[in-house]
Length: 286
Ligand SMILES: C[S@@+](CC[C@H](N)C(=O)[O-])C[C@H]1O[C@@H](n2cnc3c(N)ncnc32)[C@H](O)[C@@H]1O
Image (cartoon, rainbow, N blue to C red; front, side, top):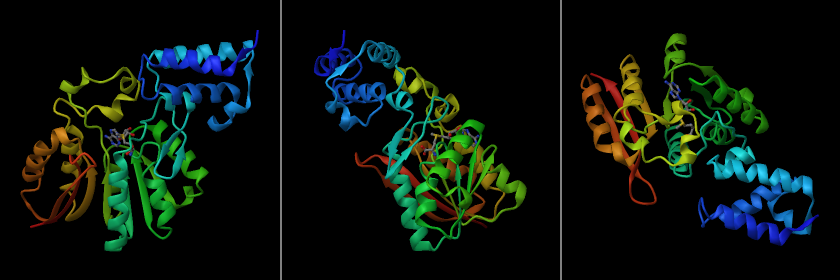
């Protein structure tokens, strides 16, 4: 028998309260919009859902209750002013990364940057707004995950910036070193979750690809490896995201790795909760 939509929403919300009461109503609307194949705002134009739709809803609800993130069920994520395709094999962009993106945009404008690389491009959430904003910038994007590169390429095509970005599958900045490409600036938001933190991760976060999350025993392995490659250059300028938990350790690692370099710039930017989130580092070989 067809069920009234308002009753269904109430039931859904109650179930979804078990995950997060703050977002349960919104998520109930999203699940319904997926089943009804309409935008979320349009669901209230429909009064009843039929048995077939109810079965689909049940299936999605079970997945959500098992901890699959809503973005993976929706196959999309809103970030900055974009709507990006995402699936289980790619990292879901986080709101705090908009600080990295905004800083990068500010610097590109101020310093008249001509070439830029993002290491660990993921779904393309940082590189696409940059490509849209700076049509003359030479842009490179690297990720070790072939699937992430495929998604970033498809998202870039959706926004008509695919031709403006050179994509490489590979580790750290290795593809750039191999081709001897000059870079004015590098940005990155690497995996930085430490072994200790893993036990505290929610079921949802555990559904995301490990190579996008795990940063080794102390969360700093990616930085160490990348800095080792940066030491091959005479000059570099990098802007990167960190977890506030590893801030002090990262400063020590910078000191250690770049002791043969003159540090021209080392600035920390805080996030909205006043925690260290982005570091700007410029070094010149002594
Ligand atoms: C935390 S996600 C960041 C994704 C996206 N740039 C963002 O800001 O939301 C880290 C990304 O780094 C990639 N990655 C992990 N290890 C890597 C490596 N050794 N070299 C290049 N990319 C790597 C992962 O596949 C993942 O896409």
